[in-house]
Image (cartoon, rainbow, N blue to C red; front, top):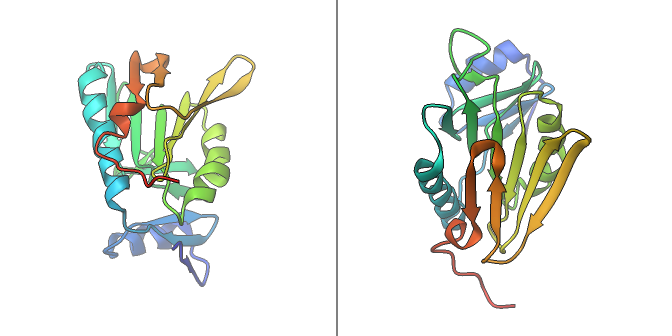
Length: 190
């Protein structure tokens, strides 16, 4: 469950406070949200994605970061995507190197407590970042991935719902097969 912490904090107070916490917290316009723990499915999907990127990304051109690194979505919004890919060198907003400012591709695996934020709030945050070329949301409870890509005429959305679907990430020269993204996940029959 996302927990809203009161009273409202300044960004500087959040940075200092966050360093003392055992769990990660996102900061949105003064409100602090505790990041939930992850389920087995969530962890398996993220691990599968990491494995796939290790095998397809040109590591001379791209770097990827896990949910341990915070992304500065704006001067008053700091989030922890499940995976972040950077083109070129990773850049931080400050000398502490806790706040990545040049995400290129961002991936989120949904959790029950974050599903709406991933699909609405974070979607708008990521759309506003000029460095982001793609945002991929992977559902952990059913075979479904939503890919948003930046194009000349704005953002385009593609939905993938079959295990034999392949997600093309042309900006990375990578393809993700959903059967490999969901490898090891047993969905309940409906």
